[in-house]
Length: 358
Image (cartoon, rainbow, N blue to C red; front, side, top):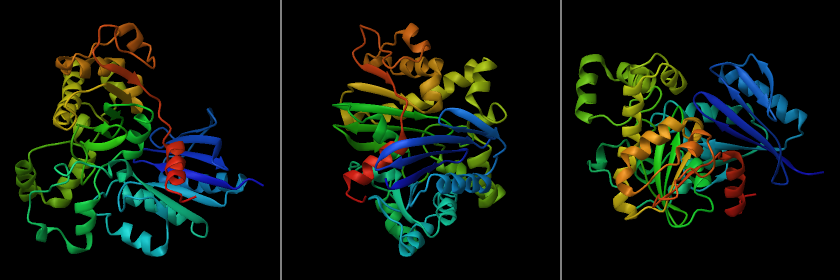
């Protein structure tokens, strides 16, 4: 009998999953917590699951029905190399909850749901294990970083790494990948190695996101903390900022429906600005790759980003772009522009196999 593994990719607003038999995918699905919609193998099966606790119960039923013997989790922080999740490793990862309060507690919640089965972790930072040395520098006295997380803060950097790993899989040369969804990030990859990214120590920096502010002046954050307290400011920056400060909920689909050209332009600029900041690492660019819910489906955003990056010589074929075709660059474009529907769950299995963990 084939040994089966459940792979869980839990984000802040959705959970993707897949069942693999001897490293071949046999089932997959997604739970959208906002709408409650649940899909299995491309078919909507129910519309009732709206929180991670209920999603965990649903996935336990999936595991039982599929005769799963092991579980692999996407882990946003706490390590670089994929590993078996021992009690000691779980304790080490748990120390990082204060660094990534929006995502890591969710990842660990699913680990607890499957206690008793053999479990693995694949870390977002895996793709960025070759991060340029200048990208890793934090110009503050190291002594102020709490000792219990100092190693993780200094050595574990980069988010959405599994997405960028899959987005750049098979691409040669210098690539800028855009993972645009509820959370957003931009990464520089050179010959398959992630050397730069817009998200480093937390999931709050870089591109403006659905409810997260993205990069803002640290001086402003200090002022706000003095005025309102750290806890309230953290809540606001993580859950009430970003695109949600323009349109309630911050959903890009609503922004496009309402024809908020000002917000579309600002978001496109924010994405392009982060991409431009990575150019010193690459020198020149061979390929742009768009992924994620926005990156894969919003042609208007891709057009806006490429407009801001037109100095690179990237030109979009608008007919192909609006059809969300796989290659959307025009014939006269100096850079290849692609749209990729990534499969992070399969990428996680490939990483485990590559590192000889399975």
